[in-house]
Amino acid sequence: MMNTLACMALGLVIAAGGEQWTIRARWLVGQEVSYKGSIVESGFGTAGATYQQPVQLETSLLVLDLNASGIAQAASYTVTKMPDQILSSPRAGETQQFRSVHFDMVKIDLNGLATWATNDANVLLPSEGMAPWELGFLVEMPKRPIKKGERWVTRRPGQPLIRYQVHGQESVRGIPCVKVKMRQESGNWSKRDVGLTAWRSKTTAWIDPKTGFTERIERLFEVRKPADREPSRRIEVHYDAISKLRYHGPIFQDRQADLVAGFEAQRELDRNIAAAGPASRRKIETVRSKLESVMNNVNKTPYRPAIAALKQRATMALEETDPVTLSVRSRRRSVAKIGSKAKSLVVRNAETDESLSVRKMKGTPLVLVFVDPDSDLSLGALSLAVESVKAQGDQGILLVAIANEVNATTVKAMHENVPGDYVVASGPVIDSSYGVDARPHTIIIDAAGYLRGNYVGFGPELPSELMSTLYRYVTVENLSRSARKSETFLR
Image (spheres, rainbow, N blue to C red):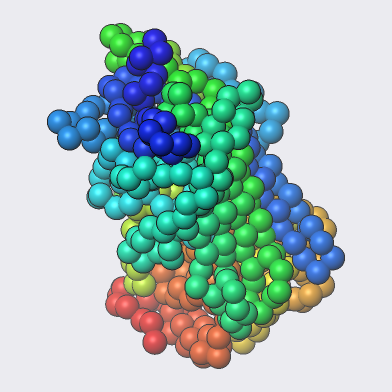
């Protein structure tokens, strides 16, 4: 068993001539690594911490195939859930309340560089801080030997430099590990730019030189609002290895079946939940049937709870309830285009606890403003939206301010800071369907269900854009024209 472990992922060898390590990834088919830990997101205002949101994290990787060059194809699996929610092997009909479920396929080269199997893009930490996947335990290393104190950088297209430093050896749970620190930051982190958000990511990895596994990952991701001196948002990630085994025969095949089924089902759901019509509904029903078949005919594996969650997501999509609580949308989903049918989005009214669905609200013009309640820019964008809607007169427009994890105190404070007729809703910080990756972000959907405006930030051009779009596509005299035509309108 030790010989097998010695040549696993990120295999480390003590090189001749002192404390040096040559890092090579030598993957084996059937190799599985699993990790467990937590993610804590904190928001900060002028008076200190304003909210803290912890979630539990589980992530795994199973090698499915290996080519002649030693490049591995592997299935990844990440779930997050709220604390005190117990992960169990579900039976048909059980409800699994995961915060997110995510499957994917990756390729890993001999130096630990991971790329997505579907498009060969590098697996990078997202600049928005949180993503549905967690593969930070795959640490890319140079081909040459490295030693304590050594530094280097890697460059990736469209991304800031990643800076590395080796900090020698340090024990984790009694296991002597090589400690490597990584740092990445936006180009404006060291200066204050009005109107631009800055971010920084600092990651530490502990790797066991005897087995080659990353034993622990700690990451701090910080976001600083425009013109602020201190970070306004922090995301702390911490997880440890809990299993490092290689499987053969039926045990490996069962795991493979669950992971592949989960990956394929997730792609189909991401593609068809956003679409509308009988054809998409039939495809969702097919996905649900396939998942049910896997659950009934394949032996249970540790991935089965996530398979059940995907099945539940399909069921909820067919019932047009809220699927967002089960799966963060895929990073590769296409962004809704101006003039196209509005994509699926469900938020929860923070004042009545009722769900608000874009699909179900067809017939009502919508103005959605994604906001950060502690940001002056967000409140400014919301105030502008209130005035713009008011200026249209009695058109039945519903204005919704969407924030993350709002409570009664947040609702009261928002209405005091921005008086007006609007609903405060709890919804996702990021929504790839509409390209929402920063706040404020304003979206306009007409009564016929077409996307008519999609605006990022709060600049001098926004007032005229909102007024023009609302008048052209939402007012009564233009509603029939809006329903007939779906041409693009974006000044």
